Image (cartoon, rainbow, N blue to C red):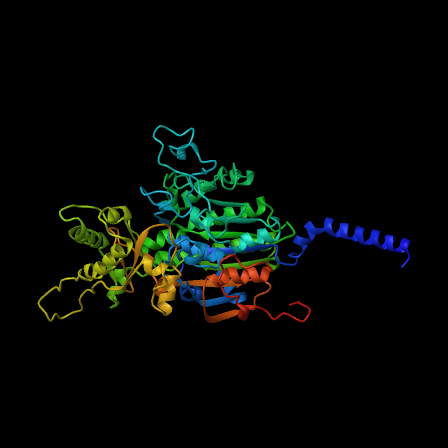
Length: 568
Ligand SMILES: [Zn+2]
């Protein structure tokens, strides 16, 4: 090659290199074009997997039937862990990991690095504050609060989330071009499934029902959110719930179908206001619908009000999906549906059928346990050896009290684990007549197992499916604790009756899992799958990395065949 030609070709290759460098930023985003404009994940708070089957014949339009008739519907999706609560469930759906991966094991917990005086919630963060609250709700710790300010309210963030979400991975893959949001009535349910890098998470101020967020995300609410708050929509929701003018919006409106509509209307305002699905990349919204949980705890899964809620939600989802079709277009959208946990039947209802269902008096059990610990370690005293407010499945020990008595973690946890079963199973109901009686007697409390933190930390759990469930529930916040598993259909009894979810039993772990969108092969799938598969599948289809701790499986059985040219 002539010297002149050589220098020309050098010049040409330099220009090409330069052009390539200049175009790097947009081309990174281009890699992900051709994916959907928008992914919407609908999470129903406390929605058991069997509900869809139960009310199938009553669904109309394109609500649940969009998933069941035109989408890929998995009928047998079960959480693979033992701590079936709201915060861990939402974190699991976003991250595709369990508590041992994402670090959220409960709605609130004792965090030794932050406080020995009170529990922290899974998302509270004193470094931030809530945004644009109405004057009536300003708590005592914020400027401008009234003299009789209601309570101490601090900001929230995903600080405890140790894993990324599928939304975070979309953000990373597009250099932040993809926009990701979370919505719920509850802060934890808006924040945790959206992730660390979410553009925003919105939830309500409990008394007024006004949507708020935290300075972790933004200094002020966006214009569209402020307009929504002043539009009269929250007053309309209160009227629909027949509690006009209420100052207990979360409790009184939140448990009614009107609150699902309220949340879905806020989702529309968000999608329109932020122009989601119009950014040339895949945007994402997670909408967690809280009302079913609030009323479900009170009335149980088999009540008429549960069915009313489900049928009403079916109509509201039909309206929301039709609106999405007219705006973003359903052909440009992928939808996913799941729940954060199931629920047990009300113990009295199950007992009537002969199930060994019991509402256990745990307050009595904790008092007896503490008395026996005092007898052993501090005779004649009344030292509290348990941290206040135990919330099954976890019972947190007061390590300072044990240390003062010269008892180490192993001895303390082993003592509690050894004492608890006898204390609980000792609550045997008295027969209502001389034995043998002529009719069925109330069942007795059972203990399926008690496991110490050290057993979790050292992997000393049973080498079985059961042990795997337990291991997935472990997250360490610097405390000593034991996990108590009561018998199936048994739970802590409350003054007001009702029911709850917290256990490794199937009714607490069974949730729906369904997808709708171009890549999914419509059908009813009966494989045993898990909620961690939701994030794994969406990440794979979106062509991004799996979230950092994801253990879910890509549900390839529900994908349409891909042709040789990579086309459907
Ligand atoms: Zn929940």
